[in-house]
Image 1 (cartoon, rainbow, N blue to C red):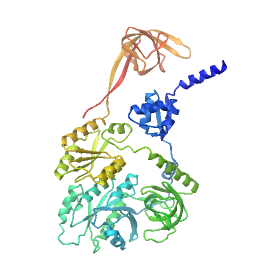
Image 2: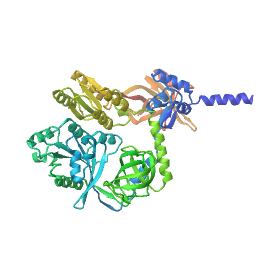
Image 3: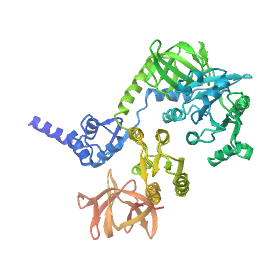
Image 4: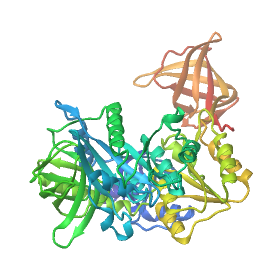
Length: 603
């Protein structure tokens, strides 16, 4: 009998499911079933009903897990587990910086292919980088530091803008200013427009280097007009954009460009402490057959020395070799300096943040944890904003802003779409057009959409197969249209979902207190008669005495009809009500029940 009673108690205990569960990601079906005290098969069947095939060990997104929990009458709270790297980042951000001083400005060279970005930088550095490149085109990111008149500038030379955006997609805002290189004979070209869009999306100031000014027959006013069309009004025309005329061949304007960069550094008030342990970004990394993993680091702030322990994403190690941008071995490096290091355990990714630590075991633990999280993140796909999930994204706490990239067949369509879609903005929902240009959808558009959480709209245009595959991999939504009003209709519907719903109070019913009972350990219970509507346990309530509202926003602790618990009691019936946290109830008081209804708003 004792065994049978014990088994019965266990069965009863098994049926008691928690009403609120806290879990940290990633969440598997097996973990969720254990937390909710539900069989894995029951959860899998619910997922199948929602069109999702799953196994017990499959990782599901937190949104899906929350929906499953609701179906089993439980609330799931997904907690973010603080990683070792996040703890390190917090420690670095809270460090006391006692020796602040001016640091060098970091400038990224962007622009159209063959407009002379690297040649211009080559002239500044007085080196011959371009001659050694395949076809004279920069195939990788290079970082270098230039010194003149005891002032220094760090340059990032990028292949077009893809790498600039790819790094920014990983959260690496390592650039203080963008030097937009425009050839005087070509003017503003498609990649130039894209570079402008990418710079604006990164919220970085732009200085235009008008290159190849030595070529005959250059119409500078035409280029100025093209720049003004894209929001870069030259200062000579009374605008805000500084345009420096340069020549990579003769060296004209090089000093002016450096002076302008130094002036921008003064305006931005860039400061750093060169005495604290270094932190910064991985610009690029490669695997050398002779030296192993080699990383190019850009020090944002601090001091990096040979022999220091470095954590960079999934890689860690002790610095064995430290070289500056000229390829010379150095013992130490300070703020805004690009350096090349060896001694890492693995090849880090461009855009990874690095930290200089004093404990190699802690660096190893953080790197292994990052590697594990990276492996887990590949199981759960990144959720990008789409027109279908826009409302749920906003519910999750994202910014109420709709980023768009527009591609159309002709410039006229681009202008019309830009005008129409910009006019859809309201006070609560902003439409932000990051980039609009004629032509097919490119890889650069997909990368910009990934970095800025944007939606790509194609009007009478499409992208090649490679672009479609890249967009699918990155989770970017590309919408194709051939009728303009359909674009505005769909966007209006999506934006209506972003508006805060209107809250309206709906009265459910009234009850009169006919008797009060004082119960020990419980408090005062009101014996009520429902005069109209219904008394619902889930409803809010207000207490009215002599037509004056004494208390509002009350809730029901318990609702009973005779001795039974009830969810609601209808007109003409009696009930017992215990008001949560309130006992001052008197005979003839009126209880009014209401609920707050949220009504969707339209634009």
